[in-house]
Image (cartoon, rainbow, N blue to C red):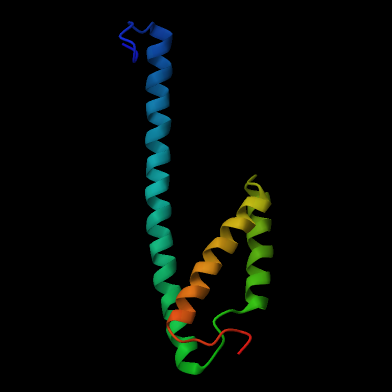
Length: 110
């Protein structure tokens, strides 16, 4: 039955089953993304501690430039919008820099 209580046709049932399978796959990918981001942030915390202990700046604009170019290329190869991948990386990098600054690494302007 649908949300209104109307019985579903065979085609509608098949569509809902397929939709459920696809959504299950999406849920699995979302979980993997969260776990991968957690691992990435564990590593960037190590980087931040090293930078803070060594007096290195929290941000590394050249590394960021290279990473953006690399991820844009990977996105194009994967048929993902390169602009989206750049925005996503910029979001992550901004968060990492905040963590590094909180650990005491100087900003690049210092």
